Length: 114
Image 1 (cartoon, rainbow, N blue to C red):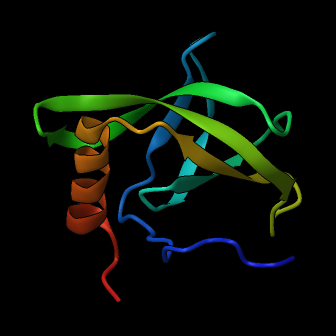
Image 2 (tube, helix red, strand yellow):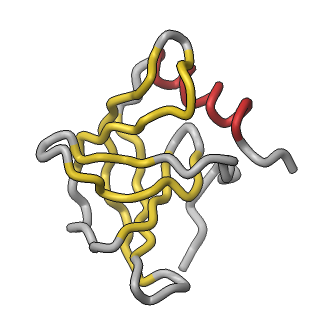
């Protein structure tokens, strides 16, 4: 598979839950993040090329927010290292300037620095 990612993925020191806002069900757990996309691990696969409205609970209040709501398009989905789970790649869609600042703070303040 050809690498199309422009930014280096960052793993956070917290496992953050991500929910589908349409049904309020947990879609998965954040594995890594950039300002352009996220990777989740999930017990269930998702339909590809679908735009989801997602909600991510933040580890603490960031820029006055305890969670962020954003749209993300499912780009790929495959079995993870543990075959009981799926790894899912999402591309963030039309990120608001406010959410971009929250994501940047999240990456800066809560990622493993390398």
